[in-house]
Each structure stands twice: as C-alpha cells, then as structure tokens.
Length: 424
Ligand code: PMP
Image (cartoon, rainbow, N blue to C red):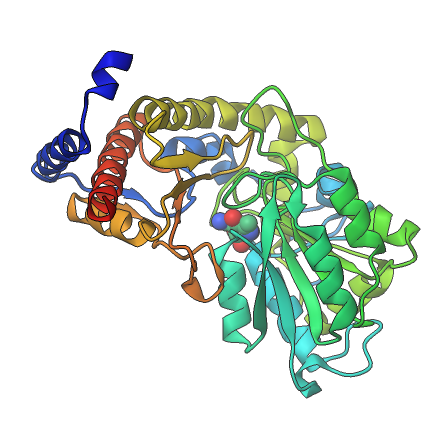
C-alpha cells in the first residue's frame, strides 16, 4: 500500500479520478442530497397519527379540541415536551406545525412591537444585526435577509460559537440584537454546545438591553449513537445570571413525527411568553388542538418520545454510518477533505480544499447528484473559503445514499486533484 502510494504520481491520481467521474456521469443517476427531510420510512413510524384522535374530542381539562381557543396549546402535550426542551410547562407554548414559522413571527413581532426590555421597536432602530455562527442553517439566514437584518458571521468551534468573538461583538455594539443557535447536533456540523458556552451566553454583558438568543433546539431528541448528548439549560442559566428574558427557545416534532404535520413549541421567560401570546392573539384564534391531541395520544409521555426516537435512530444510523464508511474509504488519507462525525441530528459537513466546494457541487450535479448549493451554510450564501458542503443523508434509501456519496467522493477527487495539478 505504502509503496503503491508513494510511486503513484499526481497525474495517475487525476487520470483515475477523471475516468471514475466519466463512468459516474455515464450512469444516468438522479439522486437528491439537498434537504434534511425525513425519509418515507421514517414518516411511516407515525402512521398511527393518521387515525388519531380516533373520535376523541376533548383534552384532559375538558377543552373541546375542535373549537377555537387555547392559544397556549394543550397542557398535556406541553408536559411531554417540557423536559426535552428544558422549559417549565407554564412557560412553554405548543403552537402550529412549524418552529421556523415561530422564529419568523418572533422577528416580525420584535420589529413591530417592543420585546420586553427594549427601548424601542427594532424597526425604529437605524440598524439591526444578528450574529450568525458559521457554518449554520440557511433558513435562519434567509429570515435575516428577508427582514433587512444584517448578519455578522461568527466562527463555530467544537463547543459552539467562538465565545470570545460573541462576547466582544455583543458588548460593543447595541445594534447586535440576537444570535442564531442550534445548540444540539447543530445544522450542519453536528456540534453540541458545551456547558461553558451556555453559561457564557447566559451571563455575557450585552450593549443591547433587548438582546435575544434564538435557541433553535431542533434536534433536542435526535440521537444517532448510544451517547445521548445533553446540553446545559440556557433558560435556567439566563434566569440565574439575572438575564431572564434573554432567550427564546424553539423546537418541534417535525423530525420526530411528521415533518409537515407536527407541532412546534416556544419557550421563554413569563414576560416573553406574555409578549408572544399577546401578539399571537391578533394573528390566530388558537392553534390546531386536534393535531396536538393526537400527538398526546400517540407519544403518551417523555418515555414515549424516547422510544419513538430509538425507532427513528434505527433507520437513520445505518445511513450516517454508510456516509462515514464511504468517505473514509474513498477520501481518507488523501488530504483532499475532512468531515464531521455527528452523534445526532440530520447532517454531515464535508470540508474540501479552499476554492473547491462550488466546483464539486457543480460536477456532482453534472453526474445527476444534487447537493445543497455550496455557500448555503453561510450568511448571504457566501462561504469566503468556498470549502464547505452540507450532506443530508436522511431522505434517500440506503442504496441511493451509498451511490450518491460514492459519486460525491469521485467529484471531490476530481476537483481536488485538478486543483493540485494546476498548482503543481
Ligand atoms: N431549525 C433547524 C436547525 C432545522 O434544521 C430545521 C429543519 N431543517 C428547522 C428548524 C425547521 O423546523 P420546523 O419544521 O419546525 O419549521
């Protein structure tokens, strides 16, 4: 092996990569690795929801779920998710089917009506900016773009955003009003925030009195290994640090039950909850409580959620293992790429040589493998190093996924060796 490698010239490697790519392109593949959607087999796990609530009309407290009202959402569902999302039941809202919608609404409400602690509405302030840990979730960045909120990238580390940078930026600039955080199994690099990161987010001094952490705990229960990572409780830490209103917690069952027909949650201090409820009272006469009730009947309790997530894991883990296996077999030791080894969540982040990500994605598309556009993991779609590619293994079948990742590695070799040969 060693002798073979040392006698192999760059020309040979490039030659082989070109042949592999030609063969790949000739196979007429049509594979999609773009979005972190649950596969149909994962959705099938929640098929019972389709026949629930099975004629039941009332919630535990006698509320007729078919009617208007109950803006807070069903208490028995909030009880089930209180522990998962680390929010006391009384401070947790169960809402519609999408947490992204709640994040959108929180931004709109903050722009148009003062959040607790604010001197004025965000829309009346000259400039509003959010810190965006990178790599991050493109839909967070799209919300900022939509509302004219400036984005300031902050590098991610293995334990969350670089807190030295965060602390400096929030301390010196009152127009910095928030930070996007996916604290557990983050999208896209799988990072889990350390206890120290959580403590510093809670305690840091902010120039803006109305600064908010948008704590998008989308993958709170989404483990892929026996090591079930737990993160520190930011809401409690904020309260203990004397900053009770600092955090908005978001979560949903989109990747627990049905991605398009789950339930989303919002948690925060009592003052923040009142603020959102007051604003939402203008927007809706109440959430879909029939959906909330069927989730209660289906999941039953926190143990029910855990058991269900084990069934999800049984479907997802082999896919994530296949990604690791193929990346290691094809790219290990080449120096062409590094990648993350997430213990949960929905994504693997692949880092190629600077200046190569867009070209890899273009070549893959040319061979029928559609990837998330390079740059999507950065504000304004601009990865200054052009090095990151997000892999979403959940949706394709295991066989399709294996073909797609193998194809992707051929593209990485082709583009990487082409770059090396032009530099040589
Ligand atoms: N946040 C993150 C970090 C996500 O990855 C996703 C789904 N890709 C969402 C939110 C969307 O959540 P929901 O379906 O509840 O709107």
